[in-house]
Length: 360
Ligand SMILES: *Cc1c(COP(=O)(O)O)cnc(C)c1O
Image 1: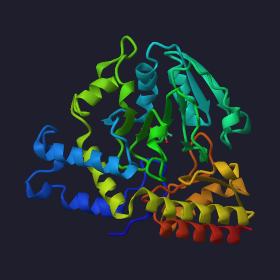
Image 2 (image 1 turned 90 degrees about the vertical axis):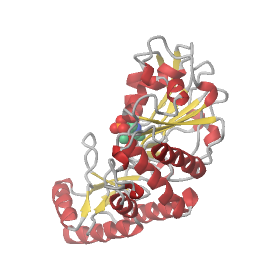
Image 3 (image 1 turned 90 degrees about the horizontal axis):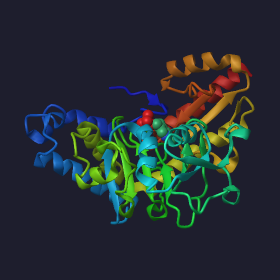
């Protein structure tokens, strides 16, 4: 079966080897005569799958024992609500760093529950950089600090982990989780919608330090309470069983690739090649400050905007899909997550070179 090169920002590419395995065991999981989707989430077979996925993620990210791993629903966007509900813990103000569209959505939602202190914003430069540590006007009494280490739409990444002293640090890692090694112990909470770098939509992974559970805001829905989720091993209700299973296959695949440090090297090579090509070719441009360029999401513009439609049409004909930028910003964007191979990036660069030559 032929597969295209898929640069979609999300739902994004999934490794072909994972899809092949899932399809081989779709109708009859491990010879049991039924699919994993048709099993009780409380069966020992399914619980085995779920536990292994968690353990593999713990191994891959070196998650300390005092952190819970939750497999939740409602996407990363529901976390924008759950974070203030769970982490205000009697306080009335929280710090947020604003580096793009996802930061803004998190801020707008938090404002429904507390005073939001925007400790730095790069909106004035159209979100083409991340603020430096010295620019963060942190409030030592904030309930927590929230930021987005990799802004998926603008292709802007932090090149450091903010130091907030004793204030819990919360990070929306939706588009960068598992792309490079991170020290989980520096964070109070990490969350990520699965459909970027983990697997299918319908699942959101939450990694949270266990002393932050409980003491939720009055009126917090049961389903939004991290403590309830943790106490029930993410099975207070029926979880997104197929997404969880498929995420587990992706974790196994990633281990086979040599883990996060190995894939990080490939990711860096992919990104460096693409940025080097864009910088060297006057037909293309990327507006992001060099130190803040994302290794996962690479936005770029064409010197002649009127050629955008043609670029998208011809790239699609060449088997390179989903290169349009986010509807809010336009231009182009190549998302080059873990499952996007180096061959895909090479093919993209070849196409871009050919297209530029034809139109320069
Ligand atoms: C995609 C994305 C989201 C939203 O995810 P949903 O699962 O669609 O709610 C939030 N934050 C970041 C950084 C994203 O990339």
